[in-house]
Image 1 (cartoon, rainbow, N blue to C red):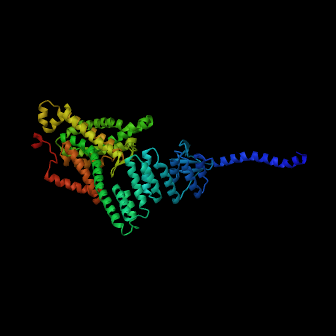
Image 2: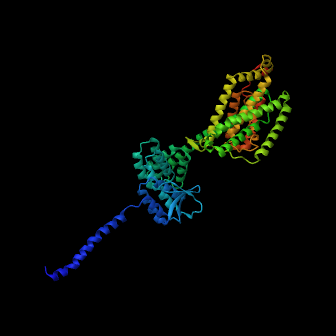
Image 3: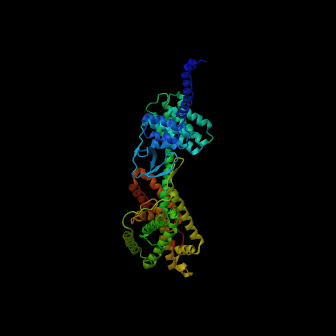
Length: 544
């Protein structure tokens, strides 16, 4: 090859060499551009994106398959996602604490951080809910799948039907599958359907029978066609009938929970009033002292043993029982024993004593309400069918039943219980056979006061702990005791539950105050016909 030819080909060779060097770099750049971003990069990009760009980033984040994607999107939809201007990152803020949105690790208190909330509109919220549904309907955790189905039921969208069909076909859990079918029926109602298909969707929702189902069907009334209206109206009628039955059950439950409170407040009074015939107007103050004993126990635990807070009520029960029991014995030995057989003076003396105790508590603790916290196992609520049951009320009902059973056991199976019953039936005969009736009276009064104290432990969870706490229950306690039968524990149980349930059924029609007045009038009329109450004690002394 001649020199001119070689010289002519040099530029071509140089171009080939340059091209060979550039092509790999270009391929690497394309690979880098095509590589998917991590979840953290996508989340941080949301901080500076427009609403349209956020919608695209939401889809991109869901496509990563990261477990944290659903929680990030939930925070975005709920307004808990913030952009940190200083670090150019995005954080989740809950209860003034910052969290990393991907790892979930706590970053620290919000403090003086320069944060701005990432705002979304209603259209984007709907898109986010749809994406969350897609993420969670196929989640391995059945609770997550059921939550997603419930969310799709509330926010019905015809675009979710195909996704729900796939999830239903793959769902192994019958309960979750039913929720998905209900969500699909609600979504189908948003689209054009034949009358038969419309009626079938209505039937699925009507079988659910709760208020959410009723709201969905009522929303259809405005746009329903004439040929579809009969099925819709029938579905609404079925749900309303079902809700009416559940409302009755709910009122019965509320009545039982109120009755358990009345039982706890009255059961100690039933003992003192029944055995000794003492009209103790300071009984409510024993309840109040039990509530303050709970406050003192929790205050000590908060400051010295915070890890034991969930056990504070269990610790407070024996403390309140002993404290109020000793106060009761002191009252009986110091005041009541000098006034037996003089009911009016006993009433006035105990009423004056109640005022003294209230003022003493105001002096020691102050007149304001005291904070008595709920342990974790008494916090929250759960649904049982159509019933909404709070854990605090449920445990109070259980506690009242346990106290009642233990008291029956003490009175029927122990020596002191036998002596109490002997004194109740015939005091003179009991004294004649060697029973020390003065000490039985003192122990009985102490037992009744102690039970009132543990009633205060329970009431501290549902009422304000203040010096006036006991005044709200003293009249109701006397009504329960008189209505059920003086000195009869079974009568006290039946009386408390009867008055509690009756009160809850009357309240919607008459109001809380008028309902109590109506019940009081009914008890007065009942006592006129049956002076000894529902269950009268039998015995020589009683029958004289």
